[in-house]
Amino acid sequence: GQQVMQIPQYQHVQEGEDFTTYCNSSTTLSNIQWYKQRPGGHPVFLIQLVKSGEVKKQKRLTFQFGEAKKNSSLHITATQTTDVGTYFCYFAYGQNFVFGPGTRLSVLP
Amino acid sequence: EADIYQTPRYLVIGTGKKITLECSQTMGHDKMYWYQQDPGMELHLIHYSYGVNSTEKGDLSSESTVSRIRTEHFPLTLESARPSHTSQYLCASSELGQGAKYFGPGTRLTVT
Image 1 (cartoon, rainbow over the protein chains, first blue to last red):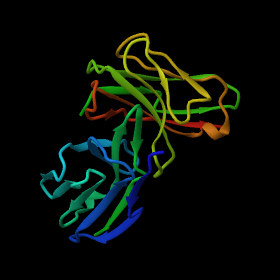
Image 2 (cartoon, helix red, strand yellow):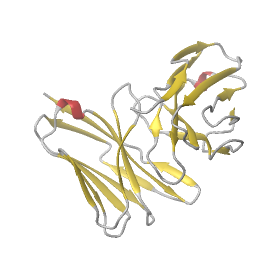
Image 3 (cartoon, one colour):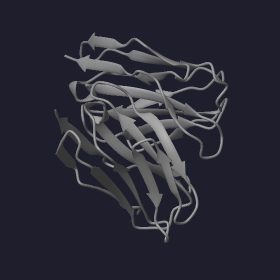
Image 4 (tube, one colour):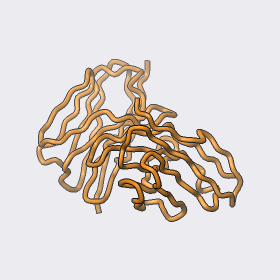
């Protein structure tokens, strides 16, 4: 079956440091989405990537889809305390829908 | 923010009770979903629907049922609540295809 890995599982950074989370799939994906969930909140859609090698930016966040469309990354430049939360990748294949296990980010002021 | 609502927000109930968690969306989305999530943990798909009269089972569906009589409404029913059902239940909706999911605020359920 489909395997989804997100690394790291946890990341603690000092405010101002950069952060990157990776989502790896065992199969080629048609697209991938990223969500952010603040502590005590619900997941909020960030972005969708569709094309091989695609790179999209939202302010300090940079999203990338791998050339083989089997992996993706989310990079945050100069983290702020408002970036705290869990970041999930998500994709659909066939009739199945899969959220990655998430990367929990904490930012120390 | 999307218009998707869940009630109740918090529920404490005894073992063996039947409960229904409500979810409504006003965006006209065809697809709706139920997820179970323990604090800080993964999201597990319970049920989903492609539209009216469509329901499909996810990974954790065996102890619950759903119905989709109206586009905007997707209630989840637990026939006999157990302590193992203690968790947060998140409802979501999206357009057909592979569009963004919009999540409701969740129902935090405790079964004593």
